[in-house]
Image (cartoon, rainbow, N blue to C red; front, top):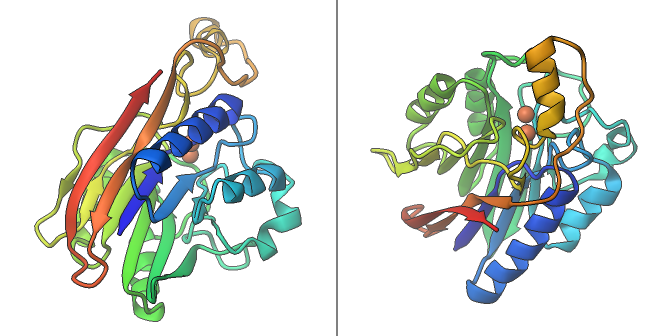
Length: 258
Ligand SMILES: [Fe+2]
Ligand SMILES: [Fe+2]
């Protein structure tokens, strides 16, 4: 089966870039399963029901989030019945939503989950390693796919090596910058530290550059306004995996600039 993974879709430019490229890829390639990180889809911060529905209408199978999961209050209105939405697994108990979803595809169970790295991302995160061990023990599945939402590259590499062979695909998100280290690890896990973001290429990881530079150059506070106009980027990867042998047969890293 062919799985398409798309990194952090940022605001309106991200949504348009996603729709355009997804339609094009579907015309050219047989894509069976799509995972999209949507933590920045609503004005750069969080997700609302309208854009969650937008992703489902694009036939996205699973939407993952991140540290911005609850930054748009509308999420509390629909997260309890959003069967294709994954917020970080390593939130403390009692936080709404689910840290994983299991989808049946061609009589195979595909479990997609997300953990947040604890280095440089403030939050109440529990140990991503322990949370993953628990999931692997308690949730039977044919394939496991993990979105590691982390700032530190070392967190992600260590996690990849630790779960090599037990989690079939580990892809990083959150930094919004694609890394050049995709590889199949020794025991068969498809790994990349960050798939990159989808949206405007004109800003600073999605935000209008003037706002960020004002803050950096003067120390004065500034609003986060999504960048727009000019070039866009569509970042992600395609993984071909044999769902019976669980072997990754090929992969392609996407960084489409238009
Ligand atoms: Fe993000
Ligand atoms: Fe993030």
